[in-house]
Image (cartoon, rainbow over all chains, first blue to last red; front, side, top):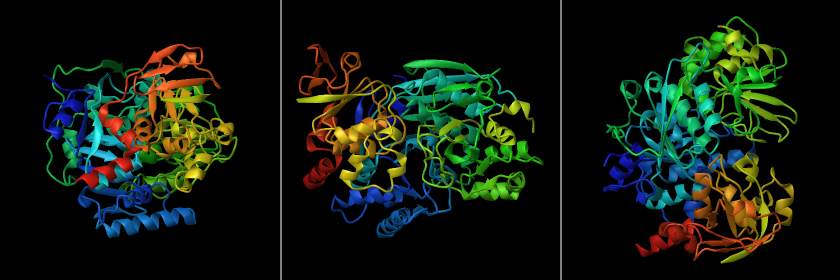
Length: 418
Length: 164
């Protein structure tokens, strides 16, 4: 019986055929957590075990509030470092290495055919490299530390076939915002989303990560792009071990197959306060913005920073707008530094911040006051997420963010050619 | 079987309004977690909710972040069950793992109003609205019932470890 990617990987891990809808108990290959590891460790402590079952599976990246903004955050980080030491967790990335999803991928932990569970909703990102990767809760992570296994429901699958060539200044972020606007915040609820078709095949691993990251915003359990030459090239020299690619079978049963053509697609903006409130950039153009964020696990990679730098080269950001740039990782930071992108951005008036989540989830480094408007390359714009519940957050691509920085107003990047 | 007073909300109630991100790393006491429940959606909720009350909402309840406090704050506030047209998947998992029963009953939602008293029978898989109309819902799978019966994932894992 032909299987979807989800069914195939569940079957492989379970050692028997598993169909969509079945609940099985599986042992994941990698476990991701971040600043929430202290809470996980506290729950793990309730089990009365001395150590976690398989420390090599655990990957811990401090990113949500780095460096610590307050004493409470500092204490939280301290408890995590103690837990890491007590359990001999080797794959620990302390303050300064970057956003967990970028670090996890860059460091070669996200591998085709592997099962990754992460205590973060954007764990879906690793599907861009052919892994089955899903977000779970903290208690579940504590249970995994204790037993190494967890119940999982094999999801039904949705196939998104994308064709056409992106126009100038239009990016995978615009495509995925368009899809989310079209399908709604629950358009892929509990589903495995397989991105396929020639446009996805032509998209870089970075762009694929943007697609899979944002799939969480339509409710997906996981997202997936079939591994190919681009995947293997990205993993060359990074992969922590050899891997076995898992591809869906021809003729597999998809709940729905949807087709999108990016030819003629315009840049998109998600308006407050939901990610599926998406309009063509022209409809939001002119909206005054107080702060712009370029970064996060969605769009803080080197290609994103280069797009922004190209638009802002030898130009100045508008005086009334704060433009915060967060390279997604130390490696991204160094690469952007090496090619001069950070200098270009700083010269244009951007503030170069440290790798990490920044203000994306409202912890620090750019919190919004009541009445303020932020345009961000992140993945969420919920009310109150970045500070005041009276603030507004719009989401867009790095190109739209950079173009808007020039005017302090939401701007169609096609009107501000690099 | 539970019988409780209804707090009714709409579609796509997200985890940021159920339990704001600004508290996720700074608030750990169960009572304090409960005091922020639904703070950015309905500031009256945490002050007035009574043990045994039921939260009823539209589709995609609990969308957004994986933060477990979104389920815990309702559990700690004494909510007996969440009834919705559908649930976001991580919230669904977190609720089960917190020992907070979830009921997906899309047909029932339009017939339930704020302040109603509704009855939910988990054994039979039936919800009865205040107007007397009743709605079948799919009972949860046995693996999940086991966790709910143990009172959540932590007691369940403790039991499993003790049996090993």
